Length: 270
Length: 266
Ligand SMILES: Nc1ncnc2c1ncn2[C@@H]1O[C@H](COP(=O)(O)OP(=O)(O)OP(=O)(O)O)[C@@H](O)[C@H]1O
Ligand SMILES: [Mg+2]
Image 1 (tube, chains in turn blue, orange):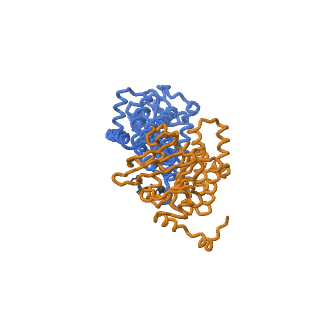
Image 2 (cartoon, rainbow over the protein chains, first blue to last red):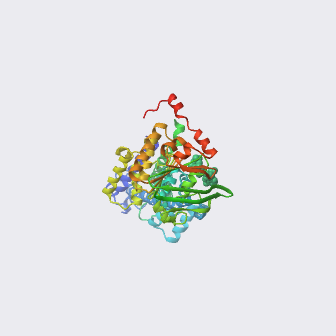
Image 3 (cartoon, each protein chain N blue to C red):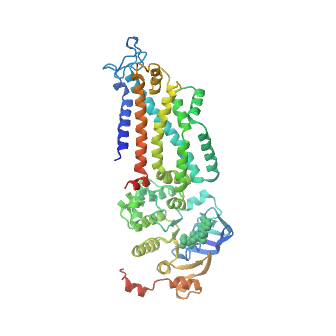
């Protein structure tokens, strides 16, 4: 099997296990403040050291993985839902439906997404649920175009025509016949988007627009760490690497999937 | 004779170009009506018109398609969807591409029963079993994907789909053109045999008079959208009136010659 996919899967599965069993893995309360143990470097007691309030960075990061992964998956699920439905309708029906939906996609593309998200979050108030929803609602445009393109070619295929002749309804043709044939590029794009969503969440939390302190997320651990970068390197290095590896892993899985699923690339390698 | 469907004075244009010109064709229970003509003569369009599935660019100038007293060209999309695949079904030239590549063939046949008939799970399984035996496929075949089957097997699956809801009319658009000669004959024999048992009407489209000879009862010869000659098979084959019909008949490889080159086992 593809090496990138294996590497990525190992990292992500590890992350998921950590997130799932956070209470057992984190030996200390991530919220407990200890003024006697401020900014302690990594040691046996505090694997990743402590922060300016004496909280255990390792435990905070373990709980933070829950945030990153859930935001990644849920945001992408939302954008998949919107992207597939709109892209499917657009590609299948064409004409006016396509026109309206494509204008909408162009509008979405016009906005600088990150600033749009920041604006909406400021408006709605920062919370992790809002972050998930807003990332989902603003990141479907690419998927929509992709699904549309797939539907445009697939709807001309004989088996679609044959389904129509046999009295299959449009909805069923779209979702039972065409969609399963269009999934390969969707998987690739969705995997890559999970990495993107995690990155956006970290950035929002870093800016104080995501997970609110004292609750931990990789982004807001970085925020508190940045003031002590000169002597408490562990506060920035560990969460930084966690974000890096997670996003990298999703991207590697995505690229690997692309290689495995794309028949054209497969031909080239032979 | 029991007339099931009647195409009356059908005229279809693409822009200024007339592709179906005043066509009259009827389909009868238990009979095979063949529509013969060379490529581009409008055979497929005639068949699609009877299901009201002409391409968007097509313009119906006049005519009607009568089925059970209704004009198929006028009834609503929801109504006609209940007829397509259930009362009038169709088998295509390329069985392989007409099947969904990522769906097991059994599920594709099952879908017909699910959308057109309101039947319970055990009845469904029973009917599927029956269909596989009708088209002489083993039931395990059903659990495979189209690319794992031969062209002949795919065409049998298509026929099983088309017959799943006991249609009144089966339209076959060059159903054997993509298959080799021995498989062709098997499929055609199978279709005739099933028809004898079920008494549905067949509209059989082909460009090949040797297939007409095997299959048809009535023949319509079509050229550039016009039916130039109609009649019972014997009459058309033995005494073709139109020059074009004679030309098409001349294209049949003469049996005598063929037997010398490759003996046909039967
Ligand atoms: N979508 C379309 N737009 C314009 N012209 C079309 C369209 N579809 C078919 N035609 C024209 O209509 C004519 C009849 O086409 P049709 O497919 O019925 O032929 P056919 O007899 O089935 O031929 P074949 O043996 O190749 O299947 C052809 O000349 C074709 O060019
Ligand atoms: Mg044709």
